[in-house]
Length: 321
Image (cartoon, rainbow, N blue to C red; front, top):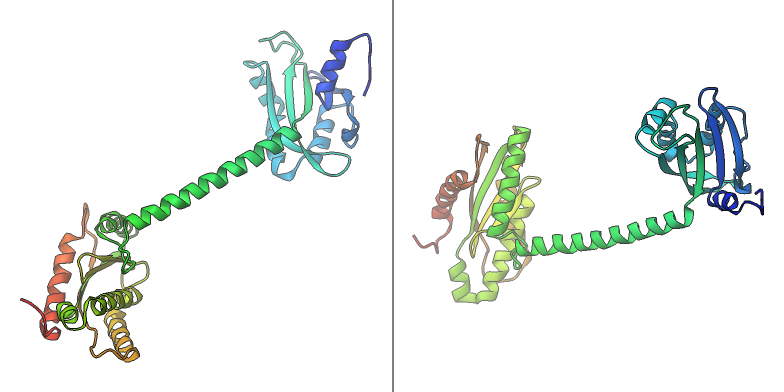
């Protein structure tokens, strides 16, 4: 870098920038007044277009399009009508073939607030250390935010989840039913709504103890979730009462196979343990189009519940009418 002991101000200005270039807008003449050795790979040329092409070649590919727009002649002239200078940050390749963060600055050489003559300077300033610190700080902040979001999501789910079965509770019912209804309406899907009840829970509790009842409740909830159509939400709406709902494609075969899967699940479960009792469940479901303006599943729940009761009358010999 040039050094002039008689002009400390000039030396100070030169020390701020990696490159100082003067451009005459009328002719496009370009003159590099000063530059550091790390930018020796930038070709010195007689025109701004040639210098611009050299810079484009050495700017990181992810930043090139922004730099092309930034150095557009008409855009520069228009922008400098209302501002003293314009700037952008980008990664610039140095003579060691590595990219470093730089700030590109274009400013008028004429009086402030005047674009007469349109001559301007292109200044390149090293901001690599500051930018690396900013990126590191932003990364740390994003990690903190992500961790907080994960904790919030976990607490949110926990607040809406029944701990015994892993099904949602009534808070989850309200939250997810709104989502599923909206999904069905937007995508032209039907609603699958199922009500299920464990058979003979009081008999299990009274005869074999509450541990047996809890085990049966957990088993039935798992079987229902595994048998339900893809994307279903399972809710424990009472001690041994469950609700399953989903938005399903019109004509989907998944609801048709629900009963068979539940029966197979119950059969496999009962065959897998040596308890002196069998676990059973009654259930009923409907698959119906979503209604315009629908705000809850209540109507479809009543219909599914009626079908569940019909099965329960036939299956649950311990039922209480």
